[in-house]
Amino acid sequence: MSERARIAVVTFPGSNDDRDACHALELLGAEPLAVWHGDAELPPVGAVVLPGGFSYGDYLRAGAIARFSPAMQAVAEFAAGGGLVLGICNGFQVLCEAGLLPGVLRRNASLDFVCQDVDVRVERTDTPFTATAAEGDVLTIPVKHGEGCWYAGAELLAELEAAGQIVLRYAGANPNGSVADVAGVVNRGRNVMGLMPHPEHAVDPLLGPTGGVAILGSLVAAASRIPVLA
Image 1 (cartoon, rainbow, N blue to C red):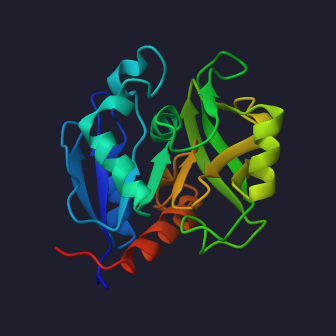
Image 2 (tube, rainbow, N blue to C red):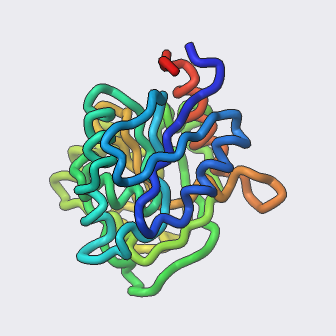
């Protein structure tokens, strides 16, 4: 068992929250390891974070080019082996484009970029990303995106609801028009999660709300229990 969780943070051209993610993970006791998008292998880690930003300038679609990077091939293999992967905002978009998470992220219903604090309700705590929260907890976490409207057709949405894969919902105002107020989902194996809010910006009480601690703190705790060979 690792005494300190080692968590990879992948940087793509256009990422702008990678250092913020590293800082937040350090505050929560983890050891972040920087990974460049061109790296074909991951270092020995207990988890991976795909940070926010505008990978490859969001050309074609947000996350559509990043999915083909060597690092994402390594992330896909890591996830297939049960490794923990968290995608934040642009990272969520990348995971959906890569087929590691269900649904798609579309332009906000307002067609405007949104940047504000939002409330999200924890729907499931049986995941490594929400285990330190309580079901029904409302977390205040900021969003900042132009393509954050998560969409799934009625049939897929019903399947996800039945499988318990909807992990977070917007509580109150929905900032982007996401179907069923969905703010975060997991894969069937519950080892991959994506969310549009930015938990890395809601960890330090000197900067505002600390709702992100429940998400990143859960990840750090889960990753610290995974044996990692340095």
